[in-house]
Image 1 (cartoon, rainbow, N blue to C red):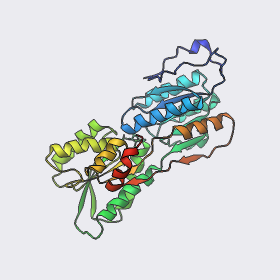
Image 2: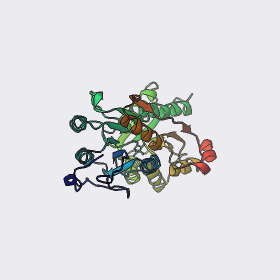
Image 3: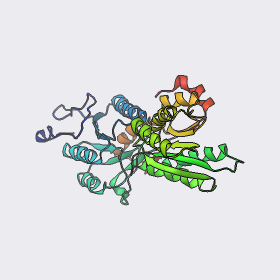
Image 4: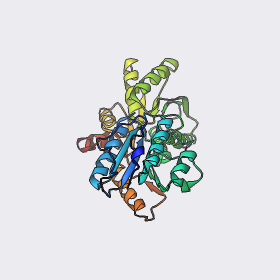
Length: 321
Ligand code: AHR
């Protein structure tokens, strides 16, 4: 592809280049150029996801232009506009929130640049604005968390006080994990969500919000955290309050990154629903197919499992991330 010289200096918002951020203007290269706008570096999951994308692009011989939006939608919109100006071949991004993408997606469509959604969905009703969406089924993840809880308290009648650490407000995983979990536990009135607040998917915020939960609610039975990092922050808060995580307060998280799995194996977390960050190889495959004009499925759902404490002990030695 050819890039107009005047556009080469276009700054990328919060650009966190991968060391391969040059373009192939004038180099005669016929590599596919992929512009990828990442959410940020908020969690262990995200770090593993970024590595997977960068490694797979390299392996597939795809030129990757990578930018880190630092969890801000405005940065992602700027990055996408910059990729449009640079006339990259394909744009892929993991939308920080679900709403507010139609205008910029329309700009990409008008410029004839196909878009692939990875990891998180958008709520645009016009699905012609993107070619495909690869990522987890977050509602299903929430349901799996709820199913475990229902089984754990089977046959018991006392009230179960639950606190919930939500992911980033307005993001698909926060919306869907809340919904999936809520739908399952709604079937039994003994389950009560007594507090639910965002921890923005970070360890620091998870700790801070859990400290507030503990101060306001002396009788917390269960913590449901929408990711491992918030759960790990909450564990620090629980220990700081003189309670035993995994025993005094049962903990369910989502992701299954190494630190989370270690806490599960150590008995501090009770159950983890896996969300795989290793989307890179499948994404590059889709990029190649879309670039070649092949038809791709509208939705590619990632395969995932769940882990008990015993299962975590067994898989930890070979866990990749
Ligand atoms: O979108 C995936 C979610 O984003 C992961 O579960 C969380 O850890 C990350 O920040």
